[in-house]
Image (cartoon, rainbow, N blue to C red):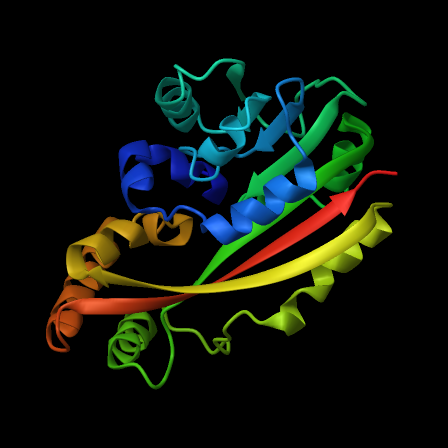
Length: 256
């Protein structure tokens, strides 16, 4: 099974543990979009709708694309009372969508699963002239050396998923690849923004969050269970909580 299909295995867990997006980020998106009742918006990879409600609140017409059948059904039910909302279940790259028809298009922690640069080229075709694109991601980092809960996290990962890859917290130096992609794809007025926040989770919630990650769900069951037991035991020894340091990156661009 493709890793990107692992998200569809437990939509209730995804809804419960995946974080919403901070108000300051969504405000930046909305200021760029200038949405109203007649605006046509497309969301790629809605999941369970962590970034959807602020867009719906503008009164726009929102069409969401979701690869997973369970996630699509969940999102459709979650927002069933919203007027002018629909979910299309399928692969964005395979769908025939109206070109030059969308005032805005956005994707929250999902666009990296699509083939580049083909996906950006398709987005350009879909947007109206002067249509706006927003791409944004959550980058959790529970691996700071100066945090005892993060030290436990590092130890357990190294025990069960050993790697010699250097762990690095997302920062400004990581913005350039996506800004370069957008410029190369022909978008104008490209901007990039960074945001930071910290989540403190107890053991149960952290294990729940881990089970929304495709690589964790892909572990052999015996390995995954032993991993989770070791994580729980380790975190219990340092107070029963873990702090996750999030960096969020937002990219805004416009079609000429």
